Image (cartoon, rainbow, N blue to C red; front, side, top):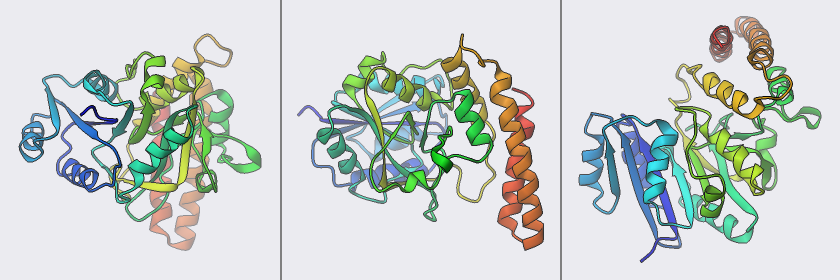
Length: 307
């Protein structure tokens, strides 16, 4: 039977996360035939072999080279047969067994929608900033840097917490690749799942290209997927800024204000100011969480000096 949905999972030394991911996927209530394709990016730790042994119905493609997120998804897409394509990170957990069915139903009901995503949360239920947003342009970067996303109707690079609690679907420019469902026609319209970006930012690139091709990109805030993203209490890596800078260069090449300075300087100022504010409040209120945020902001600001 030809599957209606292809679920693509890219692994790289994913440990036990992918086992939980696949178990929750198998327990989901999906109302149509689907296939699962796992591409392992040369983990070298037995991940591919373990999945193949534990899940005989899953197609496992074991690569000998690390192709990055986009490259591995392009390999999986070439093998996919479904009309709907779901990119699912190995650390994305479908605690809601109807999450996939809801996304599929949204595509069914809205033929002009080319991509749909759900609200991403940490294990404690907090909204995960970075699950959707708007095209990285000088204005959206400046809005995000100033902490004004969602205020006064302003759009930043990322959805704010308030925007992510909207009562209905939100039209956005891109969706996080941790849970990203795409219509095959939309993928074909952008030439597949290739990207010049190796890691981080590919999903922003794809979403903007899907929108440019005339499709709507929509975010459903009333359904959620747990995304570990390194865990809610761990140190956040600043590498996401490299990916965002890469997308900024792609999307603004040849335009005014396309210099990396118009990306890095506003963010540096914003992160530096937030580091100071969070640090002061953390000490005055004896709040370790605010001190942790201050350290994150300082690390992000320091990283920007290299961009």
